[in-house]
Length: 178
Image (cartoon, rainbow, N blue to C red; front, side):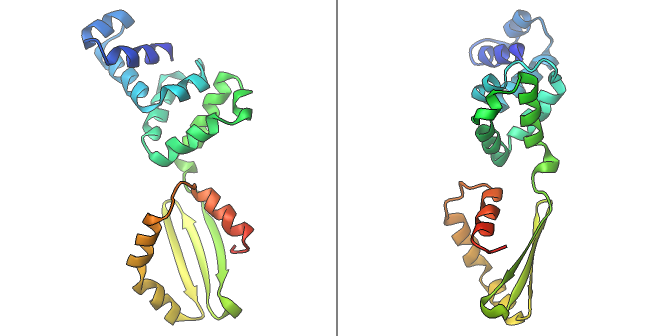
């Protein structure tokens, strides 16, 4: 990881040929080192530490996932936790890599909703990156929601979206909206 960090520092002020010589590497390897240095913020690299067992391929995979804003935010929050700091550097890398892994992005989640008095109900399910909302008992309510999707989406974009999807689900569970 030290070479990656050095490549990132040198990249902003030196020609590639100079960096290749300084790090005793080739052009292809240097490109990979710089890609990791650009995608994974130095603060996160420092919190993870050297993680010697991680290897270049796993750092490259992490760098690719860090390009996604939600992943980057979750990783930034995770590395600040007190429990994270108590792990050794290889375990810290494993924790971050698992958090960033694509298969963990949106686990299947199902929830139910019942309107006032149960006249309208809905099943909400998430699988992968898709969400399905099935409104039951009152089809006219489904038509109503469908006709206002533009308004709903505009309101969604206008809201403070700093919470992660998991926080939204916990909030719904706490409010009895499961």
